[in-house]
Length: 542
Image (cartoon, rainbow, N blue to C red; front, side, top):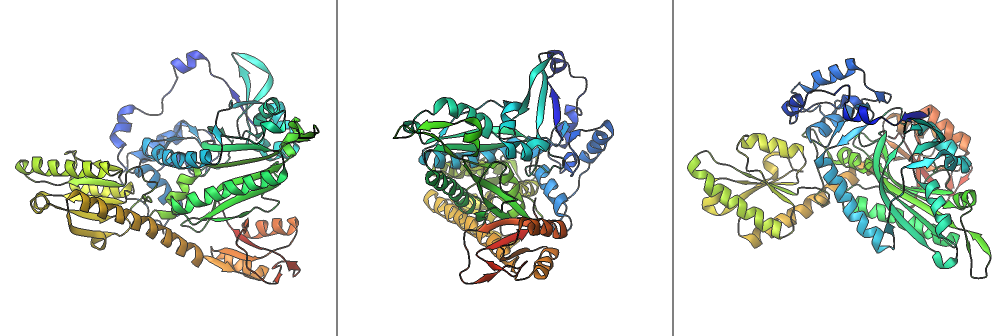
């Protein structure tokens, strides 16, 4: 399906005919849990008035978060709404990333930007409108992306001479510009990255996981030799792997995609695959060795040291806001979001507690001092000193938003110069410790130690869950049994593309990757009985 977009007139922008629903209603329900029904696996497009009316009715309802074990998808949407991560846009399949959700994306950006620059890449930006003729130049690329393209056919009230594609990815326009910038081996390697939005006309959407428009970074590099390009592609997937493990506490499995799952226009695609809480796989990041496919299509050449004209060797690599969905579905529980401290916009929330007005000033003064001590030590901390809500409401609210640590300070704590500390990852009394000294050096050391423990604990828990749900198989029947029970199947594979397609049609599972970590010894293909050099991982996925 190709969507044709017409640019709106200035009048329609200044005087829109309709609005979603009154601002007063949005203010009324902004702290209430509500489903993101605009994303409920429905075809993309503009929501009907009837659909919007139903959604507003649902927005008005106060209800608990759906238990994760009861309905994983409903739980996921409830958490996104209640934790105020995102809302749905007026066009079905689009989303508005709210400040708290965007703060998580900023944390992802901050880490990756440092790593990109450390490895010699520079940030820049390319236009989001791409001539349709560019897409057509690389045959497999246009074939792979054609169903997802959004096209602009009218601009300034006139039919355009050539259709414009709203950026689905940037390999084509990057090559167009590389051709103008690269002339000699002295211009190589050329290594750039851009943070941008992307439009892909998805038929079935899910917030953060699959939407019409999403945010990502996409790196593009050009090299003089195939060896350099291969080294670059593997280096970037390693950066993504370290980020997943060390900062998001998601134990991804890095590996190589099968031919059928390789990016359109690439020779090789490397991937990091993550297991979500419902045991589906999530492709969390990819790095592509593009070979010379795009450089030959666009004539991107350089003169080597002998003066011979050569086509450059290229890579591209990306992660997106999909990572936020992965964090939710890996660590969240029935209470709501659970954020690893290294990625959490707020690591510690302080909740002051008082009953009498005479107690208020002393408690708030102590709470402010604790905040200042933690902030000075580099801890991301928030003091919730509003008096419109009860302490119990605040506890629930900040637990829903996944804050790793909560500090409680009441009149008795002020008298004893101590605080109460509660861990988000350990519910109830087991996660609560009393009598932690307010003395800055003691408190800061304790808080940092607990944040590190939470980070490690979340990774260990996710790793244990992942490993306990991967089954080693040696036959197709065993593979089918593993997939039907909701697990991942890992087994030797050397069968054909047709056999791989058969697995997908009969089980709904695909080859997620050939892991970099491979078992030693003789292997026999689970499908054909022929010798196999590698094991593959099969799973149902998002």
